[in-house]
Image (tube, rainbow, N blue to C red):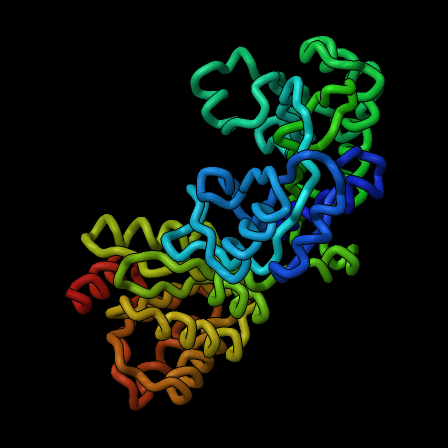
Amino acid sequence: MHLHEYQAKALFNDFAIPTPKSVLISEANQAAAGVKLGGSFWVVKAQVHAGGRGKGGGVILCNSPAEVENACEKLLGTRLITPQTDSKGLPVEKVLVEAGQEILRQIYLSLLIDRKTQKITVLASTEGGVDIEAVAAESPNKIIKFGISPLAKLSVENCNKIADKLQIDKEKFAKILLAMYEIFTRKDANLIEINPLIVAKNGDLIALDGKIELDDNALFRHEDLLALRDISQENEKSAAAANYQLSYISLDGTIGCMVNGAGLAMATMDLISHHGGSAANFLDVGGGTTPERVAKAFELIESEANVKGILVNIFGGIVRCDLIARGILQALEKVGLSLPIVVRLEGTNASEGLALLAKSEFEIHTEKDLTKAAIKIVELTK
């Protein structure tokens, strides 16, 4: 789950990480509240769950109260398209107005989980304020990487070593990095990023931006953070699927896929592609699949305008294939069958499930072999 910048900064402030004075507004006529922050200039930032806001016109520098109001009017109620969004962009329902800062230096600083080393890892660079991916590709020597053992903790000494490489005030830097580590571990984060962490004209270190990504699997422990979820920033179908414990991602192909298990889903999509087709979605119905989830899965797939056929690929381990078959029939009775459908069942009670489908009034093509099932659905959709 992603947090908005203003939500991340509120969490920063709870842990004594300095941020600029700011005010959150949802209507342009509230812009005067931002001007009252003081200073000679202001920055208006669209609040969306995407990076690259500046490149998309979502960060506007203002030199007068009139410019602040105009910037708010320009952004609020629109959809912002950035290099990290699709062509539809994301809705801008709130903007953050901040007092401008005199910047001497910009630092990149983040904490993330490195799956390869299985450690919480600090990434830092003197090249703050730009795409860290570009820095890593063009100047990898400018990236500082430090792994923290899960059996240990981040120490002041660790922070000081990183500060030396960044040539930054050790005491101020350590307070910020240790606070980030505290947030990361206590709030079950996957990523915390400050880009840039600035050295202000007076020498203070200030988090000019903030990004936090939380571990969905741990949200049951953090009801306060779960309450910050902004559904408007999520794909409508993915959000609806999540309510049924389904993992769903829309793609641009023509063959709808319903599979149990993420790895099997990826393999199914690859096989479809190998035989000349293209997947219209990624859909993992999970190991504890129920008829109700299957029915919802069919609804989601059929709602995609580009879908010309559906491939169901279920390996019955924890889940029984006869229950899946009943769910398929239940779903078809509810939503109807207007598209070709191929069902491959294998595993627990697979024979019973295939027999149920064969006896139904619907024209369902069944296979026990996955390759044959993939070839069949490609043929039917062409």
